[in-house]
Every structure is written in C-alpha cells, then in structure tokens.
Length: 184
Picture (cartoon, rainbow, N blue to C red):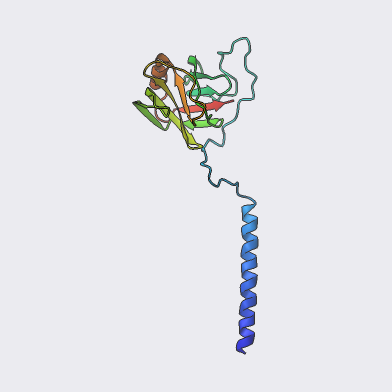
C-alpha cells in the first residue's frame, strides 16, 4: 500500500506544479516587462497633444495641453508656458532641454530647491522638479551664471535650463503640486 500512495502523491505533486506553471505563464502574458527600468508615473488621463503647432505664431499655447493652472512644456518646441487658472498664458519662454526627455504626460511639481548644483555640476537656482525616470530627475532650473548652453550629450541629464528671469517666474508660479503637462 505504501508504494501506491507514494505514486498518487507524486502524480498529484506533478499535476500541481504543472498547474502553477501554466497559471504563472498566463499571468506573465498580461504584465508589462519593466525589469531593470524605473517607471515614470504619469496621469492615466494625460493625453499627448495632437493639435498642429501654430506655424504663424510658435509662441501660441498648443491646443490639447490641458486646462486650468499648469506649466506646459513642449519637447519639440523647447518652450514653456505658464498658464493661469483662467487658461490664459501668463508667460512663455524658450528653454534648453537636458539630454533625456520626460515622457509626455501630466506630473505634479514634487520638489523645489532655491539653490543647488545641477546634475551637470553647474550651480543652479530656482529648481522645480516634477518627474523621475530612466535614472534621471526631470526639472527646470536656471544657471547662476545665466548660461543656457546645450548640455554634454555624453551624459544622462534631465535638467531643463531657463534664463534667470524665466527661472524666477517659474519659481514663483510652479509651487508644490502644480501640474506640469509635457507634450511632444
């Protein structure tokens, strides 16, 4: 009798392992692979602006960039708009992006520093951070020396440089949890 019980136990164990393996395979087919890659969290309601750029007035606020008080950052236009609660542009200015771009989406301002050192080693002021991802921190800042030179392309940098005057305007406008809408 001992021989037949061990055969049943072995058969049940084999069936259980096969069932667990099958269920694990099914589950893995429905989970996106993110191994080794940090994920940038963005609003599920965020939409990438599909509106055409205004070719006659490139400083005009792009359509599809959200509503209410927000900072709009155009990756392709290398431009920022500070938009009030009334949906009117309070200020717009060109920026010099880092070497890595944040994914299009909506993010909250999550950290601010009056002064510090940029990821490129430059002393900066009015740092407004809004996202993390791909081993970089994304945020706006102004170099204390006023430089808006292009960053070193050999480094992964998420800092978006603005002039000192624009940095001051960003600092005053983009307080903690202000929306930052990144569009193509």
